Structures are given as structure tokens and as C-alpha cells.
Amino acid sequence: MDIPPQPRIDFEEVFKNHYNSVFGFFYSLGVRSQDCHDLAQETFLRVYRGRREFRGDVAITHWIRLIAGNVWRNELRRRGAQKRSTQEVSLEEIVRSWFESESFDPPDVTTALCPEGRALAAEDAAICVRELERLPARMRQVAVLRFAKERSYREIAALLKISVQTVKSQLFEAREKLRRVLADSHSRGASHGAHDDTEHEKAC
Amino acid sequence: MEPMTVPPRDEHPSVEQLCAYSETEAPAPGHDRIAEHLVACDECADIVLGFEAMDRAALEPAADHDVDARWRSFQEVLDAEDSASRVAAFREPTARDRSVVSDPRIAWVAAAAATLVALGLGIWGVSLDREMRRPHAELRIHDVISREAATIRGAAGTRIEVPASADLVLLFNLASTTAPEVVALRAFDVRGREVLALDDIERSRDGNYVVSLPAGWLGGGSYRVDLIETGSGVEATETTETAATYRFDLELVLLDAEP
Image (tube, rainbow over all chains, first blue to last red; front, side, top):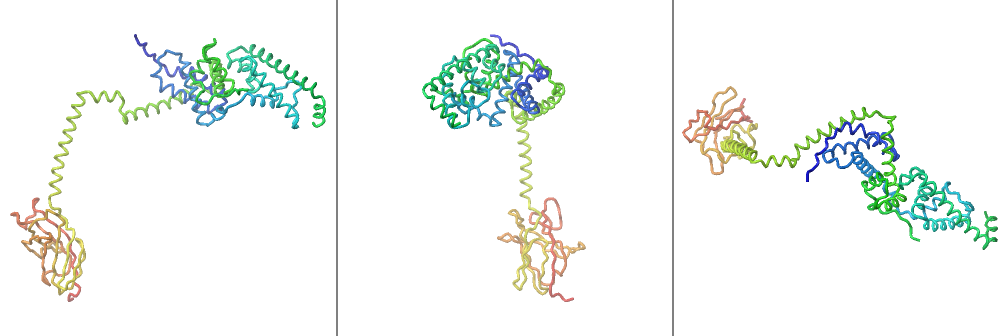
């Protein structure tokens, strides 16, 4: 089998054509501008060192992305930031943080700071977790990315390979389901313990 | 209820997997697993979003930097990189270098050069050995013994103070295993006049040359003393390349000399 000839790389052209995108990669990760230049330079230095290994069987854009991604992972390792993502996070914890965030505003959820209010909020959180577990995978992913991770519609669409419109509709549906479940739960609680609720309001 | 957990660090998708995920529009095998991971893992999600940002950035002119200027700056880095590579090439033979060394012609040339160097070193070594074997013209230690049993030990050039009435016994040791069997002694005053001449001084078994000088033979003053190798047909008066001469200075102070 013939080995395809190794493509000659005009490195200056590669640098000038891709510098902005590599810079943009690091900038999107929240890196300061000057550090972005340093990381971009490190990326192109690796591209330069590995130019003889580049066989042309993949697009050079893909190749540069791989190098930039690895430069970033090394940078994270250097900063020790990997600890953040190695922590195991339960869905219950995510929902709890979701409840504490302002973006979650389901009806009849007690957000008071008194102990009784917290107990009811914890109960609501447990209900939400159960309901989230029952949601279809895609809907659950959209809901978690939106409410717990506070990702934008566009980011969720990019991460889950779906359209922004799909994100919106999935999110709407997930919110409605949770709202209904919580409303049902509260109405059952109201019928079984109206006296308790009155005592709770007094306490709060 | 089973908690949804982020996989340990080792189970993060590789950058290549994330890149492939980012670049593929249609669902592909393994995408669900990666999507599930991205929901929980901010680090990997950020990388995927960063790849998407690359596409946008490529289409937008950068406002805060000049790519041409960046390239010129980067060229200096490349120059340094190339220089470092050249230096490293001298330090560590590459596979290509090793193949050159294994060329039989190069090996023959190297062997010939090594032989010449060895030959040169051998000749130099022989001449060095002969030079080392040749008696060294340096007197390490001499003793001056007076008849009053005072022994003064010192190195060549030592100032020696002895009673004027004492006979002197001078012991010379050349500190050489190849010291000659027989030497002659010549002493010269500061004007270069020969003031003392003794021939046929034999080396004793302990390697010393013993010279007994009755009181009055040498007055106080500074002398240059030559021990000249003889006994091999070389006249003591001759100073040739073959006759070793051991030269040293002696300052003699007679303590009770009459003014």
C-alpha cells in the first residue's frame, strides 16, 4: 500500500490562519488575555515541533484543536484546578444548590430561613430529585445544565448537540412537570396537616 | 436512589474524544455517555464549549492583537527552538547520526585516527618517562651537622647558622631513586668564583652524599653549590646535557667568627 506523501506545511500560514481561533479557545475558558497569548504560543510551539508527524489524514484544524485541548488540560493540572471536577456530585446536591439559587422559583416552595422552612425546602428538593430521575435523559440533562450549572441556552445546545429551540422546549416541559409534582405534594400535605401549616406560618 | 456521579479523573473522556464529539453533528456511538459526563463535569464541558468558541473566533477579526506582530514575536521563539535543537544534536546522537557512525568507511577513518593518536601518545609517554627517569636538578633536603652534635635540617637555600669553630658535615639527599653513584661538588661565591671543589663523593647506602668540611674551609656568606654527576666518564668540570647538575643556594652564617 502506498503511503501518502507528507504534506508540506507553510507554518507561517498555519499560524496566521489559526491564531485567532486558538486565542479564542483559551479566552472562552476564562483565561486572561495575556495568558491566552502565552497558551496560544505554547500550542503553536507544539504544532511546530510535531509538524513532521502531521500526516495530513485529518484536518489541520482538528489537529490544532487536539493540541490546544491538551495544552489546556496541562495548564489545569499545573494550576491544580482538577480537584474541582474530581469531586463526586450527587444529583441531590445539585438540586439543593438549585433550590438555593435564584433561578429556581417553583410555586409554593418555602424559602424562608427558619428551620421549619428549611425542612420543607429539603422535602421539596427530595421530591424534585425523584422527579428528575424519572425524566427522560435529555430533559434531565437540560434541566440540570440550566438550573444547577447555570449554562446558557446556546451552551446547553452545544454541549448536548441539540438546537436552542429544543433546549427551550425541553426546559419548559421539565419545569412544568416539577411544578405539577410539587403542587400535588403540597396539596396532599395541606389536606393531611392544615393545622401544622398554620403552626408553621406562626413560627415563621 | 442512586446518585449521579462524576467519573473519577482517569475516566474523563480524552481530548480527542471531546474534539470528535464537538465536531460531529449526528449522534454517534458513545455520545450519550459523553453527554452525560458533560452535564456533571465542568472541566470537560468547558473544553467542548472552547472548541465551539474556536469556530466563532476564526470568523471574527481579533480586536486586541495583531497577528502579524504575534508571528514576528513567535519567529524569535522558533529561532531559539532551532538553535536549541542544533545544540542538542551535538550532545545526543540521533538515530541518523548513529547510522553514519556505523558506516564502515567512517569506522576505518576513526580507527586510523585513533591509532595515530595512540602512537603519538606512546611516543610522548616514552619521552616523558625518560625525562622522569632523568635525575631532577633539585636538592630537596640537606643537613648540616656540626661537630658539636648540633644538627640543622633544612631545605635548599636555607640560612644555616653554625659556630665558626665547628667542622661542617653536609648531607645532601637528592630525593631521587636514580641519583648518581658518584658526584663532584663545586661551590661558588656571589661573584661566581669557585671557592671549593671536591670530587668522587660517593652515595651512601641510605642515599646521602656526605661532605666533611673542616672549620675554616668555608667562611660565612652566600654560595651557589653544584653537585655534578660523575662516574660515567663525565668530567666534573663539564656541564653538558648528559651530566646532571643539582644546583642550590646555601647561606652560611658563622656565629662566633672573629670580626
